[in-house]
Image (cartoon, each protein chain N blue to C red):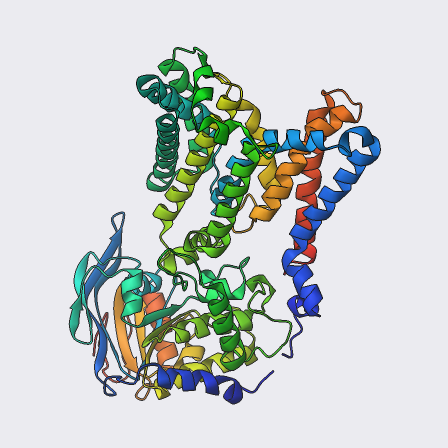
Length: 333
Length: 289
């Protein structure tokens, strides 16, 4: 080549090629390790013992399980803000079927079906009517929450009897001393990684998010791909809602899911997924989820009042998306 | 920079091997009869009759809004025509989809518009037709290997730091063009549609591209070459088809018209909506020899 492009300046060695294609993921990993080190320095008693990690293993999955398919939806250029309400509406399905049949297992199936239908509705609305997902899912967030409250008259349902069912121990128990939520997160994470990186669905999601016109020209199914992704978020949200409700053996229709809204979105964006689509990774979201999960406990353990939590959340989100932007501009060409 | 001849040869070899049972030279490959298309009440194409023969390169010229891209989208199955019919090798084609057009061997080189910048080369090569098992799981290793072979053999990418995992963002305009063309070639295209391929290319890269287009004819394939610039198209095309406001305004074999005559016709057409044909004086308005 006679013309030296900026691209060629960046091409040096295999090592720099690796750095170039993974700068964002390396950046987030370093940020995670630095944050962890800070917590250990400021709260050694807490962060050098196992108890806090067991606590993360239970609390992080509630939002991280949703963050995995949410990453895929955002990679495809959409977004879903209705998942906290899907968590709640899914539990209405659980309560109805469980009360009618006495079976916790059937209740879980009903939850997942309701979650899938909520996702289907989001997806159909976004793709067939052609409205921005941001606006549609703000609408359905209210719609699903309102339906939840109307259908159960706003009443809390006690779920204590479910704890005698065989499946309860798999959903809200402990295996080898580790809360089962963590194992579910591992399963969801591996599934999401395979779907995004090693499956046609993920290939199509990346192309749709990067260049929707190219996707159309190259014959990539636009609507069905995006609808399936919304359905995956719906199923994951409903499942996470069930895990959380069974753990606290109560279904709170008014606020189940509300506390997971910002952490789930923050995990995705801290992890380097681009809000514009076409770029994002499950690895980044995993790291992002544990960063977000550690902050709450870390701040309290470090001796700050919990009022500071939001301040630090905000600072970490702004800091990490800035780091991603800078790294991508400098290296990923 | 490799010389055009050197760089294009393996690609041409791949072309020649692509389909051993190619129809005889000069037979009609693709035909449109009376095709019309409207969008929201606006007639974008009116009564289009067009044919493309084997081993022929047709230059399609027209101003912005003349209907070039709509015509291409009909040929590639993106849009369905409102009226008229399309024939491929003499057989009527109905309900053409993008996948269906590809199965017929119609491939478009949309250049950058059909590349995903933030994705690695291998994902771009296999965009829309990933190699996967019946569960949809990708055969990533195989796709990387094919990409690597195409890069070194057909694209002339010899630089060791360009790998199948390099993002398209890191390629120059000419390299992107090469990627898009090689993608079309790899999937055994018979009819290659080049949509404004010279846009953003340097003079040297344009020469390389034009050499490649001439090679399409040599390999007994067909091409439709869309451009604004008649100077690019004239040297490689067998015929120039002029589109004007949704109609075919004329069809000019480059063996019978000089570049100067065609330039004059195009200017006259743009200014007055009609032109006088130097071969057939007084002919006005849309004609079809």
